[in-house]
Length: 248
Picture 1 (cartoon, rainbow, N blue to C red):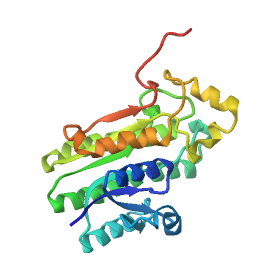
Picture 2: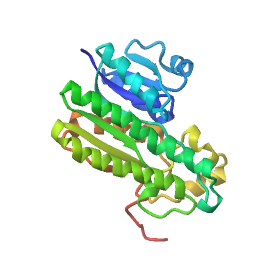
Picture 3: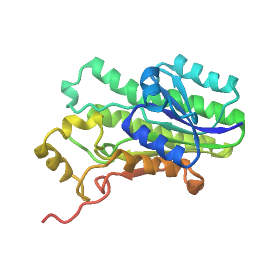
Picture 4: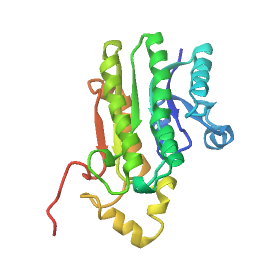
């Protein structure tokens, strides 16, 4: 069986760069997303990319997608969860519906996807690797990030606990924690030169991430080069989370 990298949320900017890296390395990919026509437009010309329409927040849809792979004899050696959203608002101004949506899109979808990958990897009995996406805002208090920080902190706990549970199976689970990334999801924070400059100054290594900065870290964590790495949160944030430069 050909072994694939499964990318959930394959239409996102980071996912597109990750899939580009996988294909350049000769790896087959399962590209999963909620809109098959969008996936077809992105990857339909590549025979090395298998398309799956999956609603990542619906556990039944995720389970059905993985069952399709199992029934077709598709082996999966890696799982990348690229589903997410951004909400910047104080908790007192966050509605119950918004809070539910943030937790569902970011944390619960990761639980659903990782669960099915772990089940499949255990059945295959050949180990594997998973990588989830957190945020630098989980490691330091950032104003107006209560809901998204809570959801992403849950992802970090999920990754560490799953890594501990499945080390015996040879399955590695890690996460990346990006800073602000120049993608369609973040355009509200980068839509003017003034806003972009203000954002870039927040990071010790001035600037913001490109999607490929994050994809590169994810691709490495999925690879054999990271075979001794599990339960780790890799910061891809220009030093935001762990450093405090001299103020000049």
